[in-house]
Image (cartoon, rainbow over all chains, first blue to last red; front, side, top):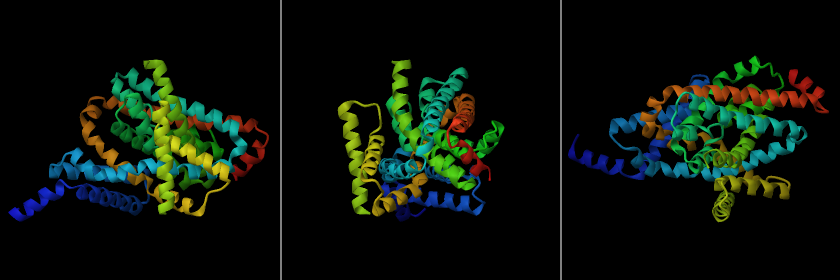
Length: 240
Length: 124
């Protein structure tokens, strides 16, 4: 490496521009792979982008903090994006008002079951408290999950990883488990995917059936709200 | 675009301030979402520019998860040390969540007044 090039490299690796560009480029590479190989759930674009960036940082010897100085501009948009979820929520709210009671009961059951079973299984197998707290909000979309995780004493960045894995699991095994419990109603199938597996579950439901997709979007928005309100309260009850 | 982005940020800021001032255990952006939702209910519709901006951000929602996801680097030790409980908890709770939510909803809406027509349509 020539001295000039080395100096440029040192400058770039410490500036926000590199982290920001790397994030956008890696994500587009992830999208390309996802589209190119038939939109398979296992080839989640976020997963691919994360692996690409992590590998790049390790090879180049850049630490996560330096990278995040640049990537925080993308990360920041999670806030306005959460606010923007009000728009699809409103549009679907009008459309599905009729099954309000069934939706509400299913929502509360599913939301509580997702969070409690995650914590219970992790606890039974000897996970640490930090890990359990980071697991609790993993069924809701990242911006909300990370906010809740921070509030109850989990690790937001660890929660973000759990959220993505949850979505991929549901997208891969959702159809199988829904057939297993013999639910045929598209509204219920979609709602289950949205409540338990947020945006990635919703994207999967949309691929299968339009009605399922609409109810999945509704489930994702409503569970974000319920989890954000209920989990911190439950946490105070159990851990005081 | 600029106007609606400002609106989204204002909702977030108002949510953030409300959460801090009232010591509510809810993230600020979630309160911002509720605020905007109530605003839409009052107004009775989504204005075109808001629809475009929100649609634009939400289309690329998964991009926004990437920086936090790279945080996995900071947790490799923990993930390795607790691999079994983490894998079991994620797999088990996700499948339980999907199945239970869908099952409860299908049982309850079957009893509803318009359930028959509903499931008839869906089956086709």
